[in-house]
Image 1 (cartoon, rainbow, N blue to C red):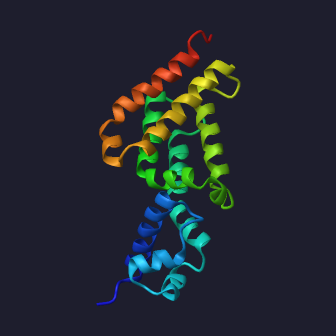
Image 2: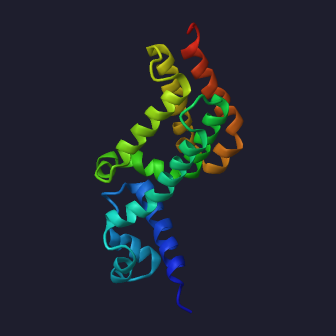
Image 3: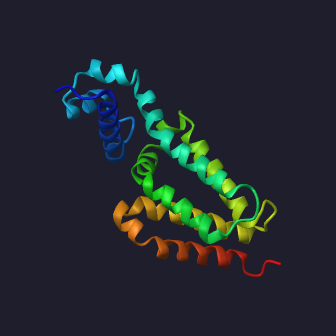
Length: 183
């Protein structure tokens, strides 16, 4: 029985993500992906005309999740535990993709992901401590955000999710150290 097109596309994305995270975007060929799936390279091209198109399809859910996070919290004052927890959840959900980013920053810069990640981190920083916060406060926010992202990538997704509360408390501690002494 032939596979449904949506199932094939999902299978292609899953295999590509696994290979991109393990070997990097540049070092993974469409031939490897097609062989792993047991389909022809032509069949792969039918669903994704280029490796960049495949990468963009992998990135779309991360962009959607971050857009939803920013829509949920808006631009006003936020409760840091809720914001950091929601950000951590996004990072855990997309941990394999973020690992692929770390594996191959140069290749992924071409599709704008590096710029997006830096923009997201700046927005989160501003949401946590304000646009005009002193350097120590911004350092604390950057450590909190970056630390959560690193933990989500550095651990198996189930393990990272199981220790969510601890990760958020550690991020809040980094944020508190940065903001101590602020007026």
